[in-house]
Image (tube, rainbow, N blue to C red; front, side, top):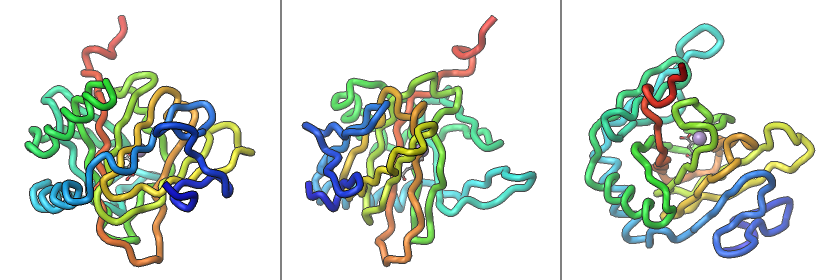
Length: 217
Ligand SMILES: O=C(O)CCC(=O)C(=O)O
Ligand SMILES: [Mn+2]
């Protein structure tokens, strides 16, 4: 892994096997989780088979189209609400389910759902946010698989504003695991780019706690 791939103001972020030197949260980056051929075939199949739609979000009192396409797959109870929308999962596609099984072995975490995002070009993006919806529990583990054109993934600390923004280039076939502390301490984004970039699919595997599990007396 070269220093240009993972930077922290010019310093390599990688400390040991997969671990990134990020304060207050566990982040691991595995650039070749899938080999290139496997990642390409997965990309092609998912571009075709996923039921892509443009999510609409409620911001500043009106509904707007998000600059990307998305789809939500998972076990039937894995209902996920964000930005005013209720997302009922579609049943697992075999490709998404078999990746889930591999992630379970690799991360020793169980995931019951996946949010798929498609970035058609450099004009597609995702703004600053944390995956901290209450359905994900207080300190979720999220496994993020990237297929297609490499994009910059930025991390900004939510409170310690003097810390630098970290940048990780998420490559074709890579896995980023965001573990303990990652969503509490950090927000993340994939910014737009003017550079020509190939289409990209990102799969974020999550564990959604069923609504009945989160209710308190
Ligand atoms: O595309 C990515 O790498 C990140 C996607 C993301 O943050 C999300 O779906 O919540
Ligand atoms: Mn996210």
